[in-house]
Image 1 (cartoon, rainbow, N blue to C red):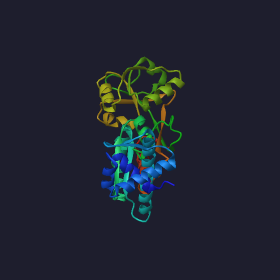
Image 2 (tube, rainbow, N blue to C red):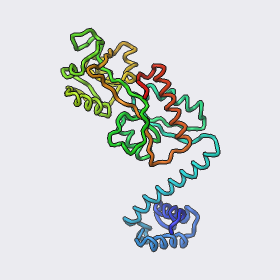
Image 3 (cartoon, rainbow, N blue to C red):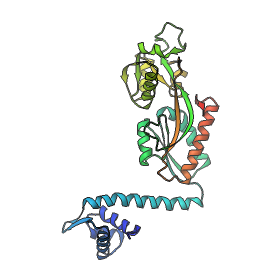
Image 4 (cartoon, rainbow, N blue to C red):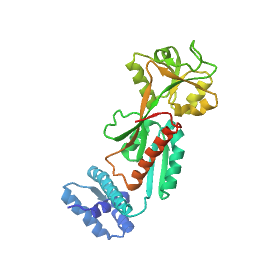
Length: 309
């Protein structure tokens, strides 16, 4: 039966130019290391590497074993680390992903709260578009993250935290309709306007909503840069749709004017997401709870305009 020691030895050989070099690195006699590989090949019934005077070269089967061995060894290391943490203070590294709009309102108070309540937790906050965050949660690059869209993400564990209303935005001096600036805008009226939208998850949410109500938007510019979209709209180059938290900086400075979208109202959900296939250590669980507490407090105080679920 192959054990964890043999897997670690095999990884050492795979990462070294030769068995003799691997033996020197890990402090094991070369003949003994060669015998470990031979026994593994006999037990698995495959050839794991080709040996030559120039060193060793993994076979295709050897490369497959390396992938499995790394996952097994990494999983065991995380298990040992998690067990040791249970009897101590909450500590460790946690990677948290947020879309730009979430980050604007959430990143600072969350970081401050984690630092205050769990000083031994090292938080890494990552800002990225939702599509990237979903992939990173799946592959373990990110431990916890906010997502707006769970399409093709049914395998992830999601907590529906809140619902945000999406608003129409215009430059104050470029109001496009025959109504007073800031008056609620019927969804159907957006069809006649030049829209500037991202091509990320928000765009998908908007287009799915519009399609469901028979509305076709005229998107003249696509740009996956929230600040630049706001700048273009503020210059009167077009119009956009955002959640209030994403544009409150421009609205507060009087550079953008917002209006509700009606008939019907446009909403999107906000989820806190983790990967159930990965073991969450104590630090991750602590940060997850802090995140929920901070997000709900921000909504209750009116800082994050949304409706709690």
